Length: 428
Image (cartoon, rainbow, N blue to C red; front, side, top):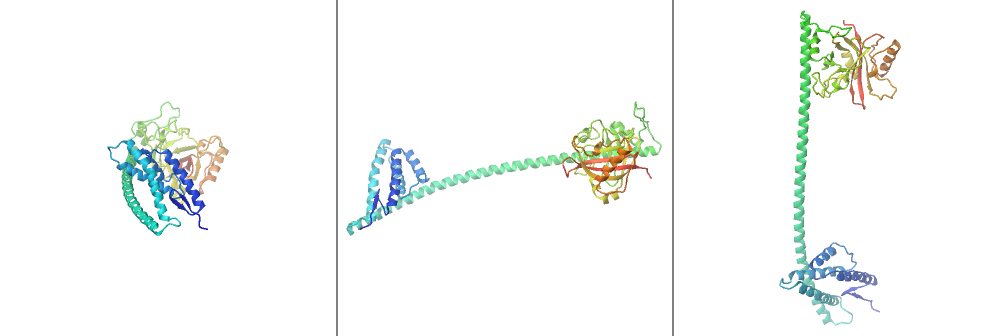
């Protein structure tokens, strides 16, 4: 018994499974034929795009045959003379449908052959198949050329758009980099200006102080200056009189040998003001060294607390944290601090790290140690600081000693502080 042959739309299928797939494809094709107006070139082009894009998943060669049919009709539609009406062109295309399918079935019958046919018929079918295959190959070549040209045009357009986008991104990046560079240069210029102004200002003040001290040494004391309306008025040291006339907020001068710490010290009722103002009341990010508002130099507080920024440039208290090394302390054991009324030399006792705590936290807060009301309270403060100290200097203090505390920022923790505490000693 011969093998059963399944035929559909001019195609031969060997198995019943393939035939079932072919029938499924034909149902899709028939539905597309019903939905598409083959006289409307727009609908046909849309259908071709969908077929090429794989919108419909065909399981057999019927799908490719249908795509060839659509492309053939489109090609004929495009070559129809312009004098013909749209309706006439549509009729020609619609009439050609059955003919094309019939011719395709003839080609397939000739290609595969039927049982019992003669060799002559088979030869004619083979010749016809070759002829049609050649024509189909020529059409495929032309189609490939057309598609290739269109693809190349699309690629060229895509490349041009990408180049334009890349050029826009390059210009935008260049603009951003230029703006960032301008900002950095501007910031550096402002930073340099403030540093130069600060350094120049304090050098002038230091020179003025030294000249006044020299004049006092030769007996040129100038006019007497005392604080008005103060029952315990003290005479201002000669070297600070002119500076005090420039700024009534001057309270003293702090200096550490072999460092750039050589600054006037201010005091106001606002501990925030001199964080960003200099001695001349100008805005200055370096700020100014200032004494805590609660300290008193007329009725000396137990502890004078001086604050200053830890500037990366080294200005203000930027070099104070050098005391974290004991070797540095051993080379710089003394701090000079004059109030406007008297000179003073202080010996370093404790060096430690701390922070600004919340009001509710019960912990030793060095910045609240200004006056000790009793010897017990004083000793308690000394014990707290000794326990915090980074190293033992061997220096201690007793109740009644005058203390000096230098405080600056410490960036090892949030709200961190670096603190150096010294006691006043008799000048040798």
